[in-house]
Length: 134
Image (cartoon, rainbow, N blue to C red; front, side, top):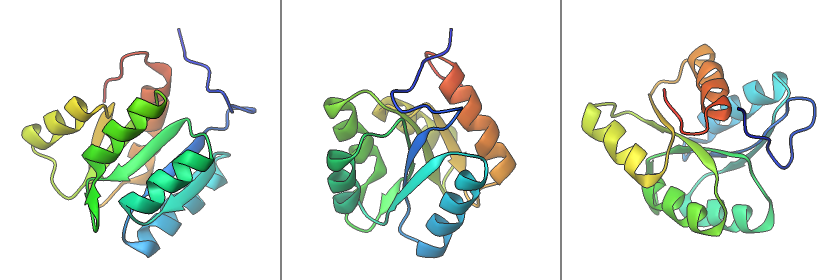
C-alpha cells in the first residue's frame, strides 16, 4: 500500500532540501526538478523551520550537520508539526549514524557525496513503504 502525498500531482512530491553547501543544494534541487518533483531549498536549520511553517512538504532531504543546528533535531521538530518522511544525508555513514537518523524519524540515511541514481531509488523506496527501509 503506498501513501498518497497531499500535494502529489502526476507523481510529483514537494521536497524540502536542507543543505548548507549552496552549490550542492542547488544541484540536488535541479536534479529533482528534472524528474518532476517540486524542490525548495533551505541552507540552515532556522530557515528550514520557517519554510516548513509556510509550506507543506511531502519529503525532507536534510544534511545532518547544519551551521545552526542538527538535521536530526530538525526532523524531530517537523515530525511534531506534521508527519513527514525524510532522507538524511551525511559525510558520516556508519551503522551508528544510520541508527541515529532512524531514531530521529528519517526513513533512510545516505552518505555523501550523493549519488543521484541512489537518491532517486531511495526516494521511491521511502515513499512506497509505509515504514521505510533503505
